[in-house]
Image 1: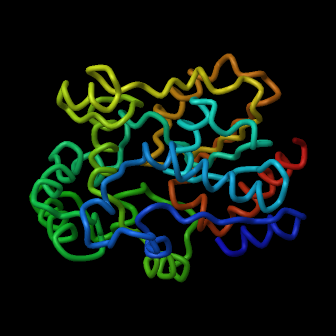
Image 2: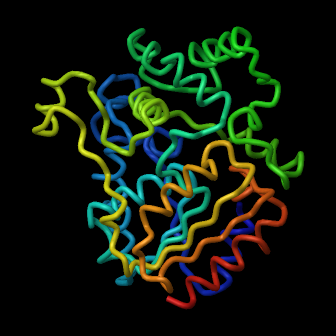
Length: 300
């Protein structure tokens, strides 16, 4: 990943890297302790409404320029949702979305789908576990037990989660596992599980009419309407045929919702052999993904 960042920088771009809510790099909250339930009371809705706009605003305030955005996985989900609410396009020149996540109802990741089907996040939340940490404690034990009971081969956690990545060296996988996966909020995992089970792209469902009415003024969560993304917003989407999280069928559903996008403003790249992690760690991603990405940015 460092090579990819350096490559973008060497092509004349300032590179700003944002850390998502909950990671070990973003725990300096002004008032909340990471041991409090309030600290973890969020889903990716809050990343859409608060974190991403604040990040864009900060970078624009520092540079005085509109941004080119690169997102991967959840970073694409929050971007697409924000674009659909017309929150960021006035600060944006273009966006490159790698392993785009919009719809996940046809996801093939055995670990993610089984966790959703078995309501793992909901159970952990009810047990009072505020931090969803795959690397240790109750969450890791729960998932190990699930692997045993469902016959999922979790000896290779990365493959079980992301799909069979084509182009990762053993050394880069070891580096990746030193840093990832990072913690998130159980509420965020519940939200993603709802999307997997229901095939929807909507805000968090409190699964209670009164609670939904209190938060949204309606009995069901509002949807993020992808057709509301501005048709003239330059987008590059790159997805892989072996990706178990950003499944081809789900990406095609997302692309169908963008069918009215201006033809020269939507560039789609398909890599048949790529899975989810290849986009950030693949040995050949420089040539396959990042050189076309930089060329796309330079055209905008």
